[in-house]
Length: 262
Length: 338
Image 1 (spheres, rainbow over the protein chains, first blue to last red):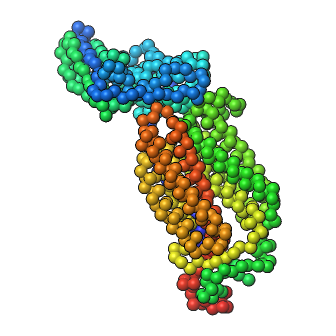
Image 2 (cartoon, rainbow over the protein chains, first blue to last red; image 1 turned 90 degrees about the vertical axis):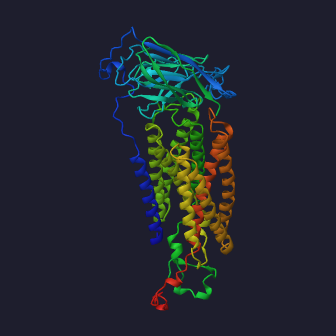
């Protein structure tokens, strides 16, 4: 190997080393508790701020779509004979102008209030090689029970930004997995790498004031203390839109939202 | 006797581009190893199997199946074959072929160590083994760390590095390399052809890393597309220089022609991959066949392009030494200095 070749090789190695170093330095530091830790083993939550039940208000409404609704994409499930479900994607579900699977939550206005974490777990079911529900709301630290009702193995793989990532397989008839997320995160994607069309979104919030629109586009958030709030409407593809609302004691206001065709 | 590295003062300037044939060189022959057909064929087989492995790896990425088996080195806690459904069939096939390549590499390294007389070939075999072990570790880290872009891109880059080493071993063990007396022609142009071939390898490697970073969601697509223009310029320059000035040397002419052809094919495949993945497939709910076939082909031809550039560089290094006439000191120009 002559001198020039040696210098070129050394330069290439330096470049690779630098690249690896830069890659390493970008790794996020996380100090959260393990995502798989059940709520019972987590640190005790602070006491919930009391809310006077005689003054609570509610907000409800309908999420609409303005314009021609996007055509639902077809899913090809032929790569796994055990997958036999509805073969349309749920990226944007619009029926008669009503938008389903929109996560609606109180984004701002609750101040430093704390809330008790429900002891009851929420369930994600894998059926027909799809996640049910497609969009889920859950409080930080609340247990999520993940079931597999399919005759095939799935893997559940959340790809969060603020929480810890994990990837576990679940064979048919396996015991449900129990998971929780420690930090707030909106539209946290969950996918199955064995069936790449399988995708859902978990929304992790600190308050119980959230809802997911049904097929009729409707939602309702109850039990809010009087105050000024920012209500956020988040759709996986259409993005987020916010509205401000002022709720007096025992108010019941309607806040509708319209997403426009992109 | 004229040898590689001999001061150019030994060559009259008027004959700088004259083709010189080295015949009857006892010194060169004593350095060589006898041609071993079985060894060479096995090396070719290893190189071909590595190419298949690169395609299998590209299929895993294009089908988004990289984490369909969540553990490593076991598959669902066992070394037995899992049900080959969904993404598992891509990931497990990739692992199975990769395991076979590790065994093949151990074999070729051992065979070369004991059968080849050339010391540098023995170490090239060891380098191949070290590379494939590094590659296996990177593959494991990709799974265990949930595909961080820099690890997955390193996995992609080292894969093609190993492919180039395997192709080089196949070439170095071939009859043409072992028995042929090199036909030598001096290069007095600047930048020299050997510089251009090194530059070609460098820009291809950068392009490989940029493409891998994009495929693994670590970077936007535009740096890869922008660098494609640089790659096209450098490779075209290299091929034209090789073919216009050294086409008499078959060992240089052939890889130069293949380099130019592969470049055209690769640009077409890159355009197809751009259309199917970025323009049309941006909102796809699952990997679609046109995207898979175009991106996998783009990766495969990219590997061939890099390997061809490496072969060209080696052949240029062997056949076309750089003339250092203008840099030689007055002392070294004296015949006695030679």
